[in-house]
Length: 247
Image 1 (cartoon, rainbow, N blue to C red):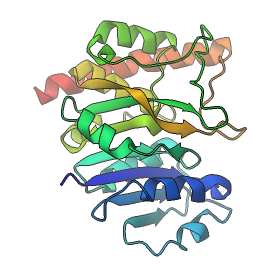
Image 2: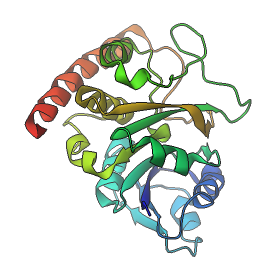
Image 3: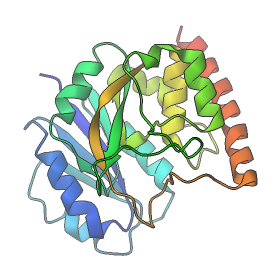
Image 4: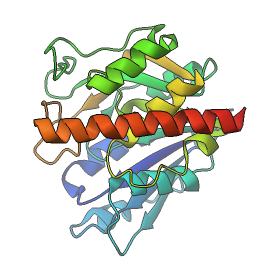
């Protein structure tokens, strides 16, 4: 049986964490695990995690805050499973997610699924077009189109809706130096560069939108958007280098 590691980063997530973790554990097999890296929370997050008497839950609490990107990176490197699924601290998994993403990784090394809003069950809206923001089956093979959408900020790749096969982790990690946001776009970029990205059209996650989300579905200002585009160009160059090195 395929062993799944769920990789989660937490920071002051006490308010919504239990509902998320319960939805994850309900999906997992007895041999799976949840690897949680807490980024020096100042609330009751770690105490809440310690109430789980479940050997599948592994918690690594930091004394110093390094940011959510480095927390996810640490979780990925500590995971032991065949398939690694990323998870935020405040969403809710849709039943069937584990099986769906494991099956998708028979085809490619990285799977990205759709998600819906927890409050309404509707898809997110593109921050550029305001249309439903959806990945389409077979779309993962369109590498140029995918990278263009990444570059202009119109690609709905969310880490919380992604899964990675273990043999691809050495390509995706370590994360590039200076990467302090958009780890999900990095994973999508390196998977796209390698031709290892597959889209899962069925939603696997209900996303909770609130004032403390690390990512927003609203357009950025001009300067932040330009900095983000420069970052994506740098990530594309680094991704192509890594893929060549692995060849």
